Amino acid sequence: MTDNIIKLTAAQIAGKIASGELTAVAVTEAHLARIEAVDEKVHAFLHVDREGALAQARAVDEKRARGEKLGPLAGVPLALKDIFTTEGVPTTVGSKILQGWIPPYDATLTKRLKAADVVILGKTNMDEFAMGSSTENSAYGPTGNPWDLTKIPGGSGGGSSAALASYEAPLAIGTDTGGSIRQPAAVTGTVGVKPTYGAVSRFGMVAFSSSLDQGGPCARTVLDAALLHEVIAGHDPMDSTSIDAPVPPVVEAARNGSVAGMRVGVVKQFRGEGYQAGVIQRFDESVELLKELGAEIVELDCPSFDLALSAYYLIAPSECSSNLARFDGLRYGLRTGDDGSHSAEEVTSLTREAGFGPEVKRRIMLGTYALSSGYYDAYYGSAQKVRTLITRDFEKAFEQVDVIVSPTTPTTAFAIGERADDPMAMYLADLCTIPTNLAGNAAMSLPCGLAPEDNLPVGLQIIAPAMQDDRLYKVGAAVEAAFVEKWGHPLLEEAPSL
Image (cartoon, rainbow, N blue to C red; front, side, top):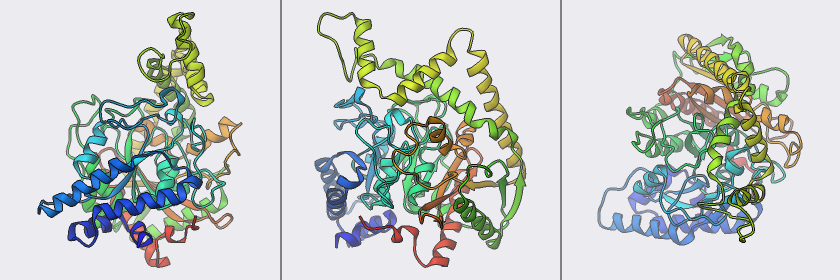
């Protein structure tokens, strides 16, 4: 019975709970049992809130017993990236500097999940402060990819993607600063969406790079992602960057997927040296499939995209240098050296030395240097000008096409430890995803097959203009349905059993 429940989609689970065929408690218990059975190998979770999850599930069952109408995801379990504050539940952001911190309030996104009666199973592993592409930078150890536990599950949201791929949860939440929702989705064969910047509130989300960070839905199907998107999106007066506009009709688009008559752009900068042959093969097949489904393919040239990686790794570290200044050992979290023999400045220095990991220190130093007197215009200022050029390239592209497609990542999942000593090789994992964050557009990754050379998942990225997030779901649903029809099963049914 447990196996039958954990293989259901979120939409199916919600339907069965609403009809009385399943109870929310039974569904939650099935997923908690799965976590207990496999998470020692996968390490997707940093904290499992067993009692809290069961209490939420019981409340859903009581609502149904009283005849109250249930929401579209009522009783569906979810894995929450450990970057969102959750009242009474540890939030560490994958860092020792916040080890054991219990927030006194919920993030807006957490509140919206609870209000929709989504059952939060616990908090998932991540690269420290969301800085990484492999979840190897977590202070609490790496997460394994359920397709091959010796491979990375992507980053920084590898815990959320691994929880989906290992059937520990049907839904998850990630955050995307340079690709940290889409890249994990690609390498685990799941669906991940970076909404338009400002579409999902950042209030209560621990900041890495404020002009780039964006929370979003992760799932195993396009429809499930759309249902979750609708729950978490919308204006929030607590977030000054939140967009005060209606949420695009993402669920309707996911239920009525079609690309007939659409113009789909293929950017020439998103292929070439460094791209795995199997990834390009599956991408080319996806483009052919879009043609078969009635789309018009348009070749695009976006020259500034070649500069995106360089611009990103000046802007993001600069903003992280500013944001992480609040972690001083004096107000909350870890405090080291406070024995009466050290000054406040020394306590701060000792705390940061003990609490921050190597990647976080590297980015803080890069950002502080880029913002320093005499270098600001040469580095940070120039990177912001490149950002404007990238935004203009997207604007020109979207005058010609409705959406853009590309590989999500240049390669499939690499081995844990393979790039640990080569930051540049690690940063290249986000080559295709970073331009979208710099421009603030919406983007999705969904599975488009397995690479023939290693039998690991490949992701197809779909990019849409800002506040046209429904186009992602319209195209994504059509592609997903065509894949299922061709192969007769969703990709993840072929994932190795743990």
